[in-house]
Image (tube, rainbow, N blue to C red; front, side, top):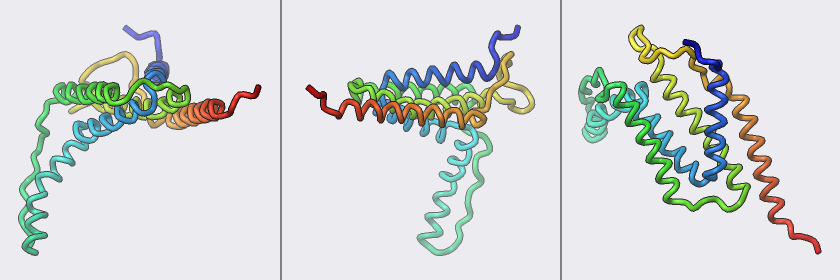
Length: 187
């Protein structure tokens, strides 16, 4: 069964959703969420997690070399990451949800409209990273896709100019809203 939307339509609906959430939450909350999303992508992403694991495994050899001045044999890095694919996806989304909850607990709701408009920018960045992670997760693993969907997965990098234009428009609107609030009303 084919879905009645295209891959671009799905991408823009999801991106619009992230923009709306960013507008509602404000820039301070979205920055906290963005930090959690970036940490989750870096630490849980299959490619970067393997690199991160290899770096951690080699740290004792590097410290031994710095301490003694003689090269230390580095242990072989682990072949496979500790998490199976569905566990890594669940852990990724738990980290994202924790980021949103922490952002809500740390900062109050934004009072000014310009704070809301600036919130669109980190929300779009978070959304692009989340979509990239999901795209990597759904991509083929060993010749077999993990999930078969009748819609092609879009590459967020193809839409970077559009996201950049939306971010610039949000920034201009926020600056206009901030400027309008600072000007005193004439009597």
